[in-house]
Image 1: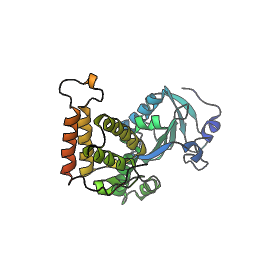
Image 2: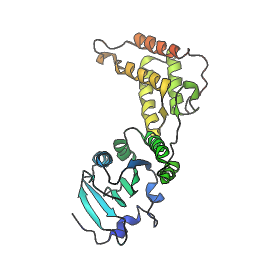
Image 3: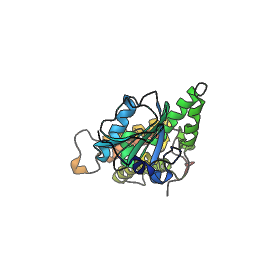
Image 4: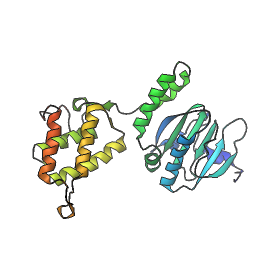
Length: 266
């Protein structure tokens, strides 16, 4: 443990005077509220640990935000699950931080690498889960509705193709499906574009559920059995023709291709 003699300097860029995460530090980062009890807990500690490892952080900075000057120490990863609020944990390079202001919720924030590892379900999904949690607890803990409202999901979870907002990456997924099943897009080009679009949709926090989630998951599984480079194909892999036929059947099951009610992303 190392006691920092100038803790205020270290905290100044991370927190506002009233104890919130500083907007200047949050610039270019994502943030989500997470449910927590009286202590940090193993699940949340594991999230912080995963984020640290993804960015190469081997230690955490820690500050108590109670009355009086905070004491800043250096702690080795993994995070201490026994940590109580009000506290702040952050990586020495400030790529990630966890603000634990009070029992009930914490704010996890960081760069894309940090958050991808710490919140593998995606920031939007984590926010949606916290919103549902806050609503369930609202009778006893109405204060949870404040962070839920402040950090609401950026996207709705679309359940049907016709629900998808135009000019989104998920709309591009559907446009690729139509092009491929109509024969205007070769199988290798479809597969490459699909994987790139999937990564972009995840990075954007777009969410799907119900029939649409099932459709996209089944396309994903079919592409797992397809090799873009013919010379690398193994026995049992789908051919271009077999892939198109299988995906066309999936597409027909949703009611047929037809004119799409959505537009591809630019």
